[in-house]
Length: 567
Image 1 (cartoon, rainbow, N blue to C red):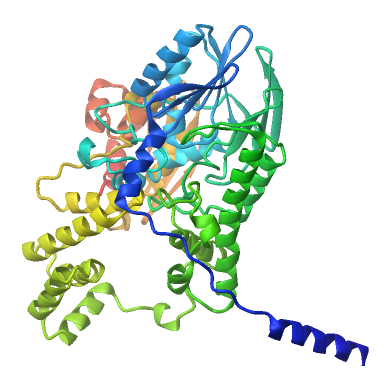
Image 2 (spheres, rainbow, N blue to C red; image 1 turned 90 degrees about the vertical axis):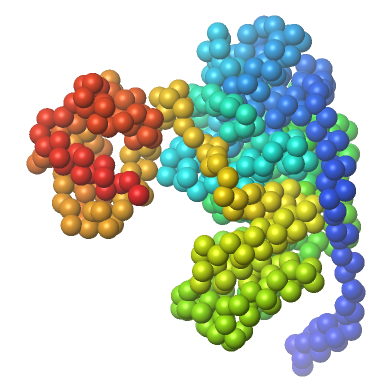
């Protein structure tokens, strides 16, 4: 009887609870985006005694901490040229040598200026233990697709005057105006936490997964100064980035922010956007930020458990007004809708639960069916054109998918698609989607010239691990060129003493970091010469002629291997 009473009471309480309509966030506009540019006024700010931030020079900030007889750099900008500009200003403030560089994470806009800051002083470079792996991953097996999508997302294919800002910085300097990378790999790494002292400055590094898995934050306990890396900046964060990324764990990101909050910093110096001082203000901003992230995570899970798929959740999810109207959660970088899709795929994978998506029709067949329903290709084109005239740009864009699947080279459809993309881009206030639309339109122009923002230079290639570079060979194998091949080779490197056995076996390339007897050819070279060939900076035939790469055995097998990894 007692339990029955409790059940009755709970039933009454739940039935009496009222649902309150949630006030939604005000949408941003392109005018808001223009105003956001003030966030990136180019200057060097002394945040607190001996702590300086360079903002507006590049996509990411660089910070200098003055020590007793040397200085510490936190993040290095993204190119040699921008790093040199910042370094000269830092040196005018304090000319002492640089004894330590700290990478908050692996992204190129934070690490590609390191060689400039390391000139003349040979500093230690601190990072999380996984940072080198993630740097190599982007430069290596994923370079072509990450370069392509990043170029569109950051607008690097567009004229400079078309870029208002990139949400978290004025512009991405990597791959722009002939600027060059100056990468150095970490020399000191840690797992969870590292405490050390440099030139009288006590430093604590905390592993803090968030925007990246290798993310860390820097805590200077005596100055009460905290450097959150990319786990906090003045815009809704990229809980998912449309250029593509490993799963970003929202729950882990919230935990990392809580670690920062309870240190009670008095100065917060982000790697993007401007610094904040004042213990109470910082605590409130971090609380709002972590609540925004947790809200998206928890509400996505709630709707998943109700059986909703990613499309439906993305349509429904939005921050409540008290969060979304915060200047620190405006959608100038990430989006709750994109983030919800990321949460869904992170927990449940690609399948949305709808049986019709288990084995969908091939896209060409789907296009032909839709064209048939419309009464023919010309009729569908007229529908798409009319949709565009009625400013239904998204529907018109989706219809051009089908039109171009059927007739890929049709100029009218290409022009219509370009027009849709431009119209959608001009309406967007989120820089990521704005420039992705506008860049995609630019790519359809017959005069467009490709731009590889991650194109490797010889200097970068020299530092790149040969193991990671050989991994990129595996994902370059063309089945149609290798399905009938069975080749075994040995690569021997004279400078490092390393040996790798390669087996090209009917469309699969196996690579082992040791010698396996039975190779038909032994390839002898320095690592840097082979790296230059693997990245296309040098020609294999010319390298064979000059003798920088030597072969014992069948040259035909070596050439056959390389012909199998070229599209």
